[in-house]
Image (cartoon, rainbow, N blue to C red; front, top):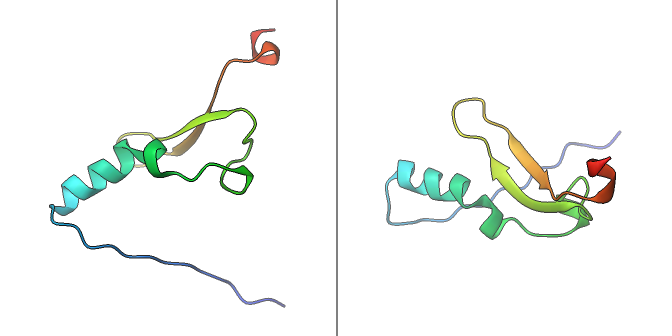
Length: 70
């Protein structure tokens, strides 16, 4: 049986926690690393977004393609 793995990272910034959280979530698509390892369907994904509010989801947004239009 394998043991669980985890990764963590930290950075110190000179802003309030609320400002840092807002920048982190509102600008997710600017820092989210592109590639198949970070997307469910990287071929169709056009951006990553956080839904606003408590319980908001992290969403992978797809562009319109021929199959979606049918």
